[in-house]
Image 1: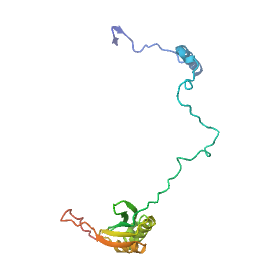
Image 2: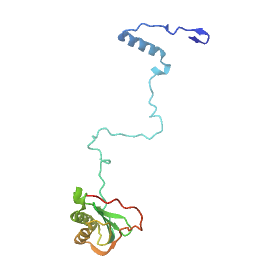
Image 3: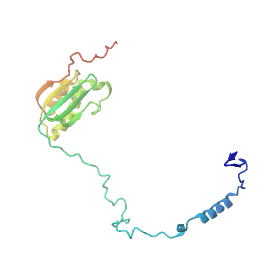
Image 4: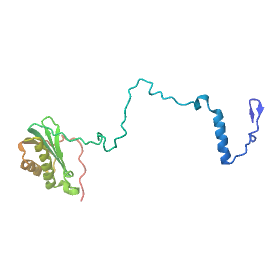
Length: 196
């Protein structure tokens, strides 16, 4: 092959004999010692003490158990003080019932679903499941200070009436009941009928 006017044979680079591992290591360390720069063998000065940075003192005598556990500390829930008047939103579908208790501005105070109280599968769509969920949500809200609610019901499910009754039995005074189920003015096409 021609490179810059000279003919070089590619098969004849300077072939060196492979040394045994013990001699190879010593030879490489000898070569490394020769190629080291002059500053490599100088002792390292401690420059941190001479700088004007603040000195940090670390106490290594204390064990990990004695150190204050600041990161592992759990935060306690702050008990909110709420107004006595609020709104109970009941979303009752064919498969589930979701109860949400809010204040008048719409900030959520407590919520519950049948899944939260331990009911799973097809039993979530029963009136009993709606009753248990409403009881759980009402207990949390009453402990915060809620006393009177206006009930807004949405959806065609079977858990509506039992949820309203459970809210009343839990100690909440119901001032009004509104049905806010959205009714389309011939909007979206409904799902196809089931053929059973």
